[in-house]
Image (cartoon, helix red, strand yellow):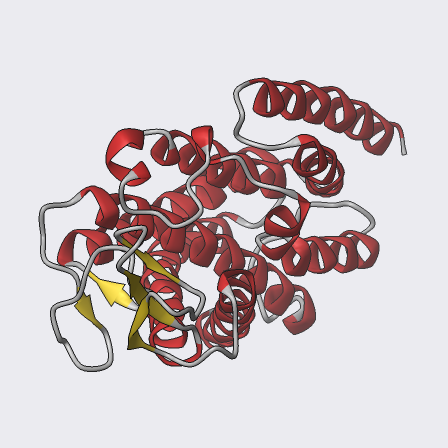
Length: 287
């Protein structure tokens, strides 16, 4: 009990500092900072390993978002200085993992556990889902940000037709490689943090190394699922007035691809959910 209380106070203190810093540097707006604070408290209080994953995702993605802002300003439809995110965007990228973390913490009493179906298939499935969640989030963000800055020609994932930068569902080689790297980083974070916090038998502990290629694959698959949804269910058109690719129809907008069924937040949420489920299943069969 004492350990849980200490972890909770650490969670509140650290989350407060990070949320205030993110608001000051325009990574989050006021609503995003408050939502981010709550999400980080839950993750860190539930386990340092989960806190480490969400913090790696947040810091690396925030840094990448701020690189090449002038170039992105000329391409992105809703460009904001610092990549400022609101509470909706924060929750779309965290609510599924937050629910899983809460269920896991309640089940284990806050004790850090390893992926091991011999001990518990339920816990292994939950942890696998959380890994897939953040591998997907990180992969999609890295892919989008690096793909936007690359000199490679974006191609629509459904037809491989060359399209303008900013088109939903467009991919580049650089962006796909970035998605793999982003998932890899989440896997490494999970493994290293687990060595420090999880109390597992040595053979089980070292088997957690398999998380790294699984997370890398999840980063790539999450990005591909996001792109497929974006190319088919999210509208993209070129606005002759703004000289940009936009996601809304209008008299000056010529359609490029997709239907007006999902917006960007919905695409992110669905791709995260699917990648979470797929990674959970893979972990059940692997561990």
